[in-house]
Length: 303
Ligand code: ADP
Image 1 (spheres, rainbow, N blue to C red):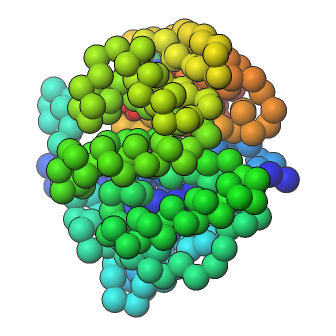
Image 2: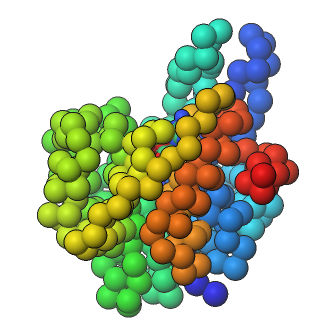
């Protein structure tokens, strides 16, 4: 069984159903990817590396992870911090506004609490958000971990997921995200992220930047536009079937990554993997929230 370890932060997600009613879930970019990857590839072992608190919401998250069959062997506990939280408000035009309470969350201490090793991981996955929430000393510790995975023959996967407000400034984000690309075997740059972070206005510019940093397999996502894949000297475009009735685009990219990796780690080639990733993403944007209820998810995927 191949083993992937996914590192990042899962938060409490509160979504307004109407003016006075909130529904509660658990979500976060890398966690969303872990959920969809595991749902789509039952025989891959998925562990989530993070830190949670001693609060009851943290306990509920652990329970959810169990329901999703995500291994909790890499979940650390902070005694004095809680789970981060975010709230989504959707107005009557469908526009979403996010508010976050995550600055002092347990997950921001993950690498301080981490005292194990991931040497038996075949794949290690992290994102620009995973990096952004850590202080510099923990970021360096994370790169030591990445180096140890690669030295043991494992592969590293990175999605930049640029969130400006989590970084001191753009320069800081560029420095660390470039370093992450420099340590990655597979990367999922998004068109919007690269426009905001580097000013790249087309796929060629994104590819040139990421390839120059040594990434062997580059999957450029760009909404409903086709997915561009570069593998060494080969380049292909996989069309995306446009979803006309988009309900909520939250987690589209995360779901794509989960679907893509589930196929890729099961031995599929890059084009089949991208088609499957697009199918998983199309499913997720057809329902509200980051994590689609299991039954609806499998029904939609099978259709
Ligand atoms: P991110 O969440 O990283 O910004 P994108 O908006 O680029 O991600 O979308 C990720 C993936 O979701 C795309 O590659 C595509 O497969 C799918 N997707 C996004 N929007 C649509 C849409 N309107 N119709 C169909 N698929 C979509």
